[in-house]
Image (cartoon, rainbow, N blue to C red; front, top):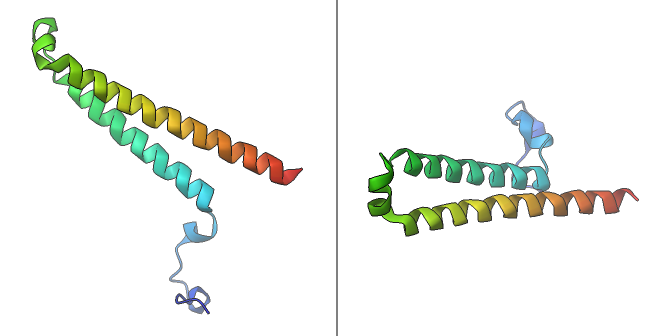
Length: 91
């Protein structure tokens, strides 16, 4: 028996019956990529001109871009894996 008795009333959120594990995983990855992108944009906006860009930390910007691209590539690969898995179960 479940610890949650969802059939007892209308307290159950609408999204609980519509979002599966795969969809929840994709939403989480999309959120992480969005947060990383916003952080990266914030760092880019802090650069005032080209002269201070060198002092700002090229290494820091490089690693921020690398980390963001890693999140993006991971998200695309996970979406591809889910697509292939769903396609395999349909056949």
